[in-house]
Image 1 (cartoon, rainbow, N blue to C red):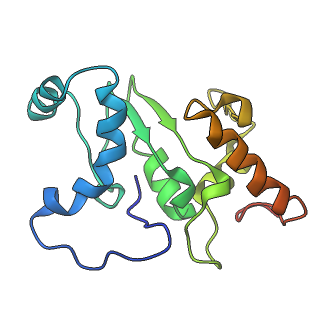
Image 2 (image 1 turned 135 degrees about the vertical axis):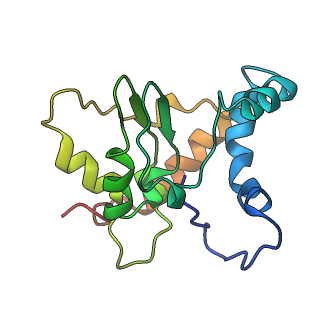
Image 3 (image 1 turned 90 degrees about the horizontal axis):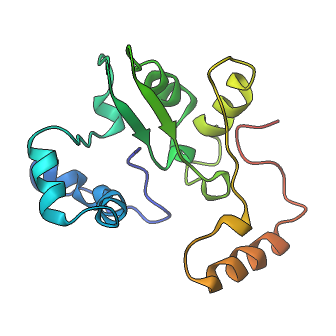
Length: 163
């Protein structure tokens, strides 16, 4: 996932690489914990069955026979998205997840997710699944919150990255 913060910046974080990326790992660990216990997750990470890498460290890699997930993709730039998508090696599958209504990039930046959805839609082997309010699996109140925010932005311009 890209290291983009929502709104306020946390600034410089002390520690090694792992300490710096730990805040960004929390959502992934929470999701994995729904499928396995933390000890299994820790073991699989130690054995490199599960590898979590900041997007910035993907350049130059080719990932063969891998299931690759990019989360919070709405916060990638166009060049970051291109770099990520071109890491796919033989026998790999890529899943890109993001929400175009939650872009935290600078106002002038184009979302790599929005750009990729537009640019890649006619390529064989590419598919996009768009989820809506009815797909929300969080607290039932979340659907009402989303609806309230949508009502206030119904006449808003399209998400950044679209024209």
